[in-house]
Length: 283
Image 1 (cartoon, helix red, strand yellow):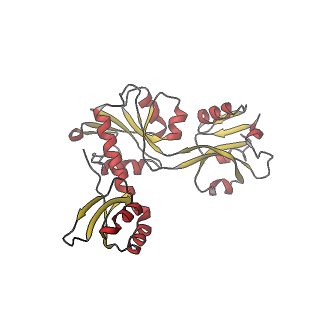
Image 2: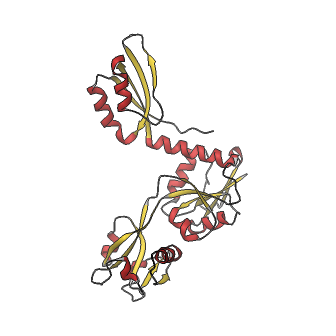
Image 3: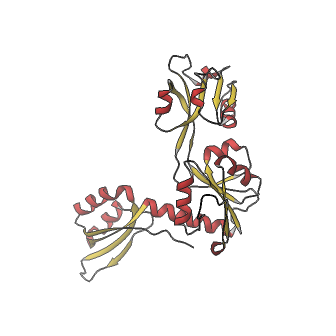
């Protein structure tokens, strides 16, 4: 039975639960459940703190888990990144007081940096030849400068509103770009059958979220042009119609490009364009 760790709270939790449910796995029925046994799919789901998931997976007590790329890096474990999951995007940045003289990475030399990701920040600074004191805080790091604990901070940034409200400004290049990832134990083979099944299902959900099916009719002499406009996720399926001078085309295209592609196809004489959602496959 494959043991899967999922976040029990935080920004990654609900998207992770939704993705697993769409992939056909059974979730907990109440928030107090810590373990769910899904015998039909031969898996066990363990609801754990996001910060701990990489530790459990790295030590091999859990086979796979869903966590953030940044959390994996900060854990220092041997867990392996297996599959990006397309949600939970974030950027990890340095920020200093508006009136400080800290403007570049080099200016961090000898300073105090408050962060919840001390290993990630320490390793980043070390790679760039910067010596600084890293101060670990579990949350609300933006208050550390005002309270005199640190000279600057390193934290996850989305809109930057929280930092601006605290009188801080972002500087230097991003430390890391992060998103949710599926990680695996170093003791679990990359070609493990259960892992491959889970990966296929999750990739099916990703495909269903990002792509749609587009069907249309096109004059035979315009088929090559239509295929060039809509190369698709896979090669288009082209079928002859009863009207011998026309062909039917089915292709999987990015959801974000649908309106643009429809305009282009109508321009070259396509007709009857139909767009339908894709159902995630469960194998």
